[in-house]
Length: 503
Image (cartoon, rainbow, N blue to C red; front, side):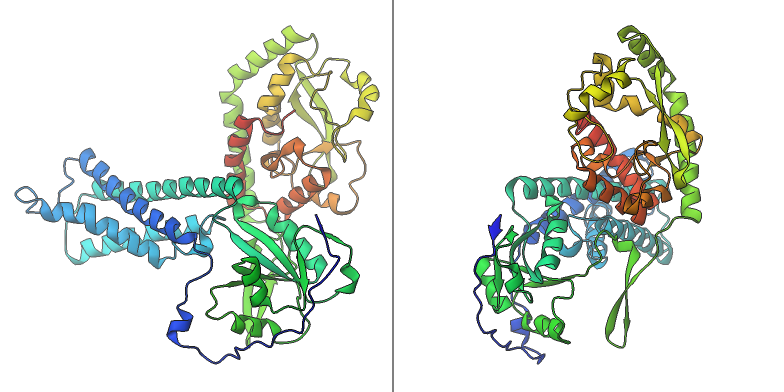
């Protein structure tokens, strides 16, 4: 941590730009951040290859693949040109038209994949229109296989490339954006905390430029150097930044943000605005301009309606099928528990559920039968804060129970709670019913049903502090969607296999 013990306060340099258009040469200057250029080139090559491979698979799979190309039997040149040249090139053009190569959507969030899927739909529409317009009787199975296969391969390419990009960002601190935060110190520190929670996002704050409160911040510990009274663009170049993040209000003077945008024209430096809307997901925020004033409209969380009905149906169906498929596993675990320690196979404990209703959660027993009696002697060894008691080497857990916990198999009986409607597959973790009244922000967790897995589980589980776990649970409550649930379920698989934070 650094201390704000001195400031380089200088008279601000008046910005030269005043909104007057510059020459095309000035606007065409290269951006400071250029990590995306080789990344986009790689995506272009992989997407072209994915479409070509999909065409090859379709051709090899169906005997009628050359239907519609009347000269293909004698001279297949045109057929192969279309299959391995024009169709992959068409994919790239339509992907580009749908901004699937836009650097703002690469590497983070679902927008990149949504744009790829929209491009896939556009390719299907384009091929169908061309076949209809030219009255070409194509092999439907071949075309369908080629197009669907290309879409799946392109999505797979994006997933693998994003994984590699995230590894580079986490382990090498490369391929990211060096940010200068502009605003008051509390606003900048809040944004700093938010963007550094996820190193894979590639946002690296390198300096803070204060717009107010210089004196009050002297002696305060800060994670990056703090400056005041400097020309922002000159400061960005001095610290090697490529992005300016305006935090919160940043300045009470009308028009200052607009003038900052003018100052950055042609500089190659990106400008982002971080309003005080922390922990609100993008789909809930919409920009609605009125007479040149961009208003951020924040929609209410979706806590009812068709989406919730679909979630409930998905929970019931998945829980029912899961219970039937896991009967042999349940029997094997039950036998192992009985051999390890005589006593009940299941452990049932009161937990607080939806809207404060109490239910009894089902779990495989992982502790000796006298675990509750021994708890009092171990309270001072609690390794977590908040409402739950956790120890990495809890002596009350028998060996088989330790394996069940590490593999999360002790949670499988909660499918019974899901099938009964007391829990969901995804949601905040259910807390013991005797651990307080859930006052303040914590009580908001009760607006949705607790889940077998959740955002806290895929973000660190028992390794997280209580405050961080609550923040993640509240974020889920405010921003849940079916797509988000499926994403969490997918991430749960990796977390369970890695046994991260499970003890």
